[in-house]
Image (cartoon, rainbow, N blue to C red):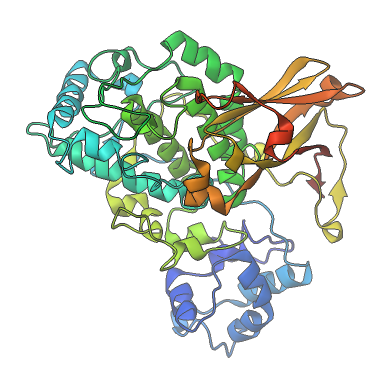
Length: 488
């Protein structure tokens, strides 16, 4: 970063880069966290005087002490009210990691053959073998119940550790030591080889649950139907929205158009098994599906300059405890959440797409729904979009994944899928967030002066409930229409 005075600096573009890992480590050991916006804001005056030249106490080494220009920039940040701002977007660069996960569309015939061998051999292994397909798939839900983390900050870290575990097992097959787990870009049609053995389905060799007995065969929609469902659910739009969020909570959000919102919709788009948390991981497409979400997280990290633990923390506006012991646990894996942030340190990388577009700074989100701090100024634009929130859904009363369908005068204007257990009352993660909200981005003209109604469709068949859940049975959630606001 050039050492020039910045008259209007922001935290995301300038200030967070003033601190090196050694500084943040040193202050953390003293019980002072300078890696996040709120913490640095609270300590900004002390930081200013401790780093003020020419007699600064911090940083301790002379060669790293702040210049007068950097100090003046930091002072401007304080004077201007600690603006959060937006980061300067970074371009993606080819990975130098030892393992490169390729786009499944780009696999050569020999690579598909080797991947076929690896999957086939894992599926042949005894169910008691911890590196068998059965045992590995069973880590997600049944028969090892409720280990997977959904709709919380550990969702991405848990699945990153899970993919590493599965990939290691693939590489344990003789002749497959260099195999990596390709990703299926869900915005493109699934590759043809995923509908051939052994990737087309999996049959349970033994019971995993009363509802999933030996002989249960995973079920999936056709490639054409999956493509149609993905388009109907506007998953591409949701991904684009998520990738332009500079704040971690907005990127990962399931309430709004975050990456877990797209993930949930993707599960619903792929078929009966993938829609069902209990058995989703037994469908072989699950692994290619989740490799893609991990890729998107890593691309977001690169774009937002958040590829190390400390830089990642700088994107968090809120609780960071999921990165600290004992709350960083990713049971049943030994790797903890903080150790998943730097994918390079795990020796894993992703192939860049040939049609990847450069990040567009103009598309970067700088606003939120509903309300913003009045002191920073608010712009009320003549926008064509609003957000309709379905608020207060009692998810514990819905037996499995569900789809919320929003209609305006009886016409479909939005749909949201929520991925969850068929037994949410027994799920610790579900209990932590018993009531959830879902946002629908809508065209104002499609709802103005019209009657809005909501239907809840249960995606997992259940003999005790019909295909629809009445709203009074799930807590009588409310509808709220909110305007999009932008920081001035």
